[in-house]
Each structure stands twice: as C-alpha cells, then as structure tokens.
Image (cartoon, rainbow, N blue to C red):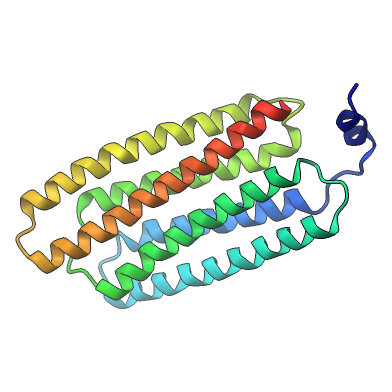
Length: 216
C-alpha cells in the first residue's frame, strides 16, 4: 500500500470540497436551464429578466469557486489531488462564464428571432451540464463503483459531438436563409458562443475522465 492510500484511509470524511463542488455544479445546471428557457422565450422583457438571472448565477459560481480556492490553500489533506479539485472547479466555472456570455450577447444584440439550431444547442448544453453534475455527485463513491461515473463522462462526449453537428448545420442554414446582414452577424456570434459552451462542458468531461483514470 502506497503512502497516498494510507493517508486516504486515515483522513476524515470530506466535508468541504465535494459539497462545494456539488454546489458549483448545481449553479452550472441552473444557469443552463435558464439559458434553455431564454431561447424559447418570445417576450422581450421576460427574456431580459432571464439574462439578468443568468448573470446572478455567474456571480454565485464565482463565489463558490473562490471558496474552493480558499479551502485548498487552508487544507492539508484533500480527498483528491489539489490540482484535480481545482481543475474541476475551474472547468465548471468556465462553463458558467460562457453561458453568461451567451446571455449577455442576447441582452446586448436583442436579435429579432432565434434560429432552430440555437434551441437545440441549449438543450444539448443543459443535458451536458446535468451529466457533469451527475459525475461530480459520483466522486465520493468513485472507488466503490465507477459504472455511473464512466457513463456520465461518456455521455458528455456524445452530447458535445451532437452539438458540433447542430452547430455546423445551423451555421450553414444561417448563411443560406438569413437576408438581414445585421441579424446574420448577431446570430452567428451567439451560435459560436453556444458552441464554446458545449466545448467547455466537454473539457469538464475530460477532467472527470482523467480523475477516473487516476482514482478508480
């Protein structure tokens, strides 16, 4: 038995990091749900309110991320390597940040309409955040049963590939069908931010997969 295994057996049950990571992941899921609502909303005032709510969640995510960093600096024994805890938190925060950027661009540009691909991409983003949250919840039982954990990060990858396909089709349709140049520029920028959100979720999945390789 190596030193890390001995320390792992002797260390107390984690009461800091996993709850904080779960909280941060929950904020990510809430932000993605608001984003999904945003792209089916037809009322401008309600749409603006949804954008503001997403901004609030982005601020909440920053606060939790700061707490995690503070605890990392103040804690000697952690349930996983410090860099792994920090990497999960960073990636989840990046997802929340990009979701907020999408919302703020909608607020800034106020497009006349959304293309169908946008709605589909927000659905895939929401599903991806739910899978990432599910994996975070499985961290505390990873060494006992890794089946569900593996399913989560594999599904994240599948969803990202689906989002890539929707993005490519959406961009093609946009340049084919949109005749208003100003609207085309707005919608193209928003679609690209949605793709970045899907990619950030996939990056979170890669971090989770690397943790599985190390600890399962």
